[in-house]
Length: 475
Image 1 (tube, one colour):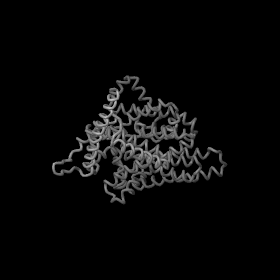
Image 2: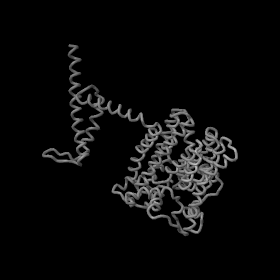
Image 3: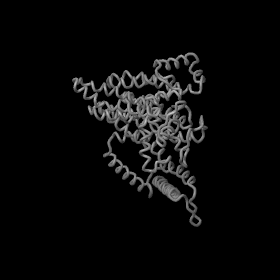
Image 4: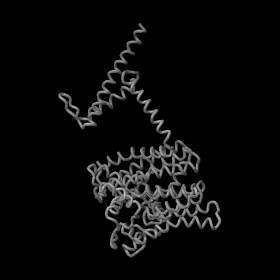
């Protein structure tokens, strides 16, 4: 009797498992046919809607996995899975760790934020009318990658620069990124769609390459792949790093600035000078990359001749700035027209760098934390910007201590310049490319702190990405 009690359930389980496998295979085939053909009707067989087979698969697969056991379908599937795993491991063994870790970080962030931003764009009304329309049938999806200043880069790439003495002018935006957009779009006709796609491709590709270079530099300095892996992950999940994967200059600037400083770190001075020149052409504050390069030239105490030769090959950086200023002078009559044009966005620099943070703290003390958020529409964004600046400044001494004066000075000056502005604006964007800060964060060993930071950053990253696509002032 006991033998019959054990044999019968086992047979029943095998029968049930075989039946479930049959249903799963049937619905999977149906879903594949619909995906490949768009739907077909053959006689009394109608395969036209993907919702039904997809819902059945979502129900049956978990039940089948929970049931366990072997059957006619499970054994081949497991064998195929083992084969794919072995092949993936074989392919992956030839891929550098820096590429694997960097690509994984980007894919995680894209998977987490793009769907959320897309849904936000579908269900939320924009805070203001979009400044441009994207030439795609799936416009609402592509808007995830382009808003606010993206339109200026597209305009420069398609129409070139212009200057207006009485209003906003495109000369405020430096030329490297839009010129690359134009160059990449040209073989594909150079139209609006090609130019927008070029911007997206440049941003994502530059982000991947920047993370690979940063991963290698971090592993070289700290001697640990784990520190390098955490560093690149911190870079992409950082809330304000949402701009790295948009039609913005952040990813390109991160790439050329990391290349310039890493080449100087390893003594390749002429390469450092050339990459530094590209950093200068990427953003107005790109010239600040020259500070760590000049300081790194002093690191091994060279004699006067060596120092002069190193500084000489950094000359492309001021030359690039002079060249663009000369071009702006030809358009506007003012070599610093690119700077004066920014006043039409209501932005200026030159104030005490503590002024805006002091104003933020005073407002919080006056109104209370909750009351402060109700003082203006942009108060929550200002709070996030200010907290970002305070966190970066708090980590700056560790940058000086662990990475040296050159890296520390680069972070400090790169924060003090925007902090001298007349508003807490853009601080998060500027911080998102200050890679030495992320190297310090990546070197911290606490596993729980790492996981908690990732979760918190992804939440705020997703929130800001949703703000971006709905034209909230998250810039």
